[in-house]
Length: 233
Image (cartoon, rainbow, N blue to C red; front, side, top):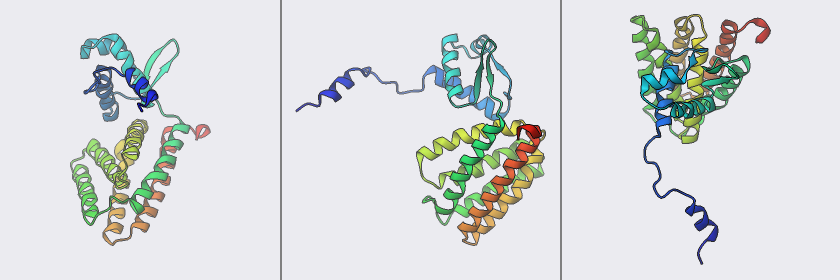
C-alpha cells in the first residue's frame, strides 16, 4: 500500500534539486573566508552595494548571504544601521570555550579516530607552527593553531561535531582579532601544543586531555583580560 504521507511530501519537492551551492552560499563562503582570515574585522560594515559591485551578484543574493552569516554568528544586523561583522561579547567567549571544553578534550582522550599515526600528524602541525614562528609569520602561527585544534576535533569521527566545531573555530578567529597582538597570544600556546603532543607520543591520552583542558581554561581567561573591561568579564 502506498505511503500517502510520503507521496504527498515528495510532491512538494522540486523535480530538480540543487546540486551545487547557491549563489548566496558562494557569497557567504567568500565573506566568511575574509572574516576568518582577518581581512574583515569585527565591526566592519557589510554593505549590499559594495559587495554586489565587487562580486557581481544581485543585492537580493547579498541579503541572502547575510542571513547565512548572521545564523552562524559571524555577522550581526543592527536596527537602522545595517549588517556588520560580529563583535564577540563576554557571553559569546564563555559559550565558545564551554563548547570547546566539552568537545576537544573528550575527542583527544576517547575519539575513535585515533591511530598510531595521530601523534606524528599533530607533531607535523606543531613543527609547521615553529617554522612560521622562526619566520615571524604571525598569521602562519595562528593558522597552524587552528589546524591543530581541527585535527583534534576530527578524532571524534563525527560529521556533526566537525560541522559544529568549524563554526566555533571561525567565531574564535573573531575573538582572536580583538586581541592587541595575535602573535603575543598564540606563541605561548605553541609550547603547550608541543606538550600535548609529547604526552601523546608517550601514549598518555588522559594526561594530554587534562593538559588541553587546562590550556583552554587559561586561554579563556587570557582572552577576557585582553579584550574586555573588568566589568564585562
